[in-house]
Image (cartoon, rainbow, N blue to C red; front, side, top):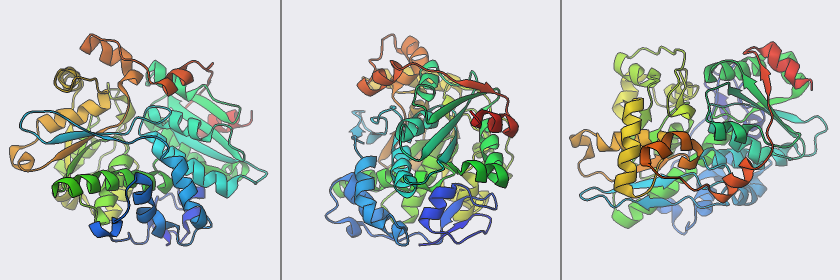
Length: 432
C-alpha cells in the first residue's frame, strides 16, 4: 500500500511515512485507498490484537515490518481497553476506557505502536532518529514513556509553559537521557508550529533525523482505528446495532481514527466531535469557512487547540465543511458545562471522569432527541481523572486514587529546559 501527502507528494511506503512523520511538501500522509471490510471479515478475531491484525495487515503490505506485525501489536495492546456499560435508566450508553496504559491516557496506544514500529526500523542506526512531539498535555508523556531508553531513538517533548496540569507536566519531564523535555513560553499551537517548521527545515532535519509522534504521523492513527473497530464489532455482535461514538476532540487525531474505521466498513453509526471552548471546528461546520485562531486555555487542557492539524486529513478524506457537517456532529462545551458534567457523572455513574471525557458526557446528555432516539452511544474516556485531581476532586468532594503505573511515574525526579517559541531556540536545545 502506498501513502500520499494531502498536498500531493508521494508515493511512499508505510515505512517512509512512519519515518518522515510529515511529508516533504508539508502535508500529512494518508493511504492511497482505505481497505474495505464486512463484519464477517473479522470472524474468529476474538481479541483486540486479532482485530488489529485483520484491520492493519493491508497497510503493511510493502513494509519491511510485515513479518513483525503480531509482535508490534503485542507490544501495543498490552493493557485492557474495556467498554464499561453505564447503568442509566432508559438509555443505552457506555464508556470506552482508553486510559489503562502506563501514562493513564489514550495516547499510550498510538505511542506504543509507533515506538514498536520505529525501534524495529531504526534500532541499529548510528545517528539516532529524533522524535519531535508537541503536546497539550497527554501526548508527550505517552511518547516519552513509549520511547524511553530505546536504542536509536531520541525524543524532544515541547509543551506550553503553565498550560498543563502539574501531574501532566511531571509525566513530560521525568524520563531517561534520550528524552529532552522543553517548556515552551507559548501555547500548544506555538509548540506545534515549531515542530512543523523544524521538520520543514531540510538542514536541521537532516542533522537530527527528525520524525514526529504527534497525530500528524499516520502511525498514531492506525492503532487508534483499531479500538473503534473492536468496540463497534463487540457491540454490533451483541445487539445488532451500530453504536454511535462521542469523541473528545482537540487536534482531531482520535476522532479521525474513528472516521477512518467507519470509512473502512466497520459497524459504526453517528460520530460526534465534542470540543471545548476552542471553537475552530464547530465554527467551521457552522460558517463553512476554515478560520484557525490562537487557542484559549480551558479545563480540558489537552484539547486546547486552535488550529487542528488533522483537519487537513479530514478534508482530504471526506470533503469540505458542507459535506462534513452531513457526516459528523460537532459540539462546543464550556468550562462551566464541564464542571457540571463532572459532578453529574460522579453522581450518576458512581465514579469520576476527567474534564476531557466530561465534554463527551455533557454532549451525550444534550443530544438532539431525533438523533438520540434508537441509537446506542459509546462515549470515549480519554484520560484517568487522577491526572486532573485539582479540577475533579473539589467538584466531587472525594480523593481519586492514583493508578499504580501513574504513581510510579510521579515518583521519578523531573526536570525541563525552558525555551522561546522559535525554531532557533529548539535547535540550540538539541545541541546538548
